[in-house]
Length: 94
Image 1 (spheres, one colour):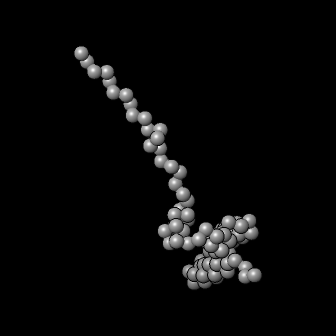
Image 2: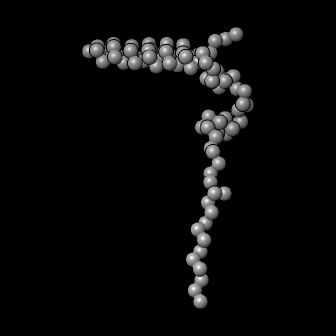
Image 3: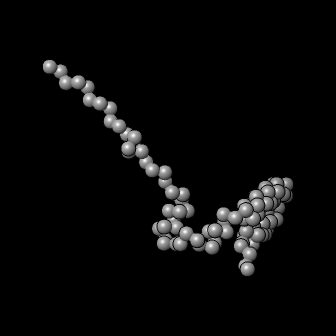
């Protein structure tokens, strides 16, 4: 008498749960509260609009860098654009 072939394993219960976002895992690792003000700032509509403006600014700056032939000008323009990007994305103090 031959044994019947084994049933294929049911993996439906072994499916991985959806992983939390990277920032949520980092937040939990360092024990930061959910309502951390600096993190909440990055979720606002104003921040996202500013981020899009910064992206456009970097694209324009990159094109100017490509058009210029001076490495010194490229370095200074990159440093200036980086400073403006950080200052522009900084949350406003109330």
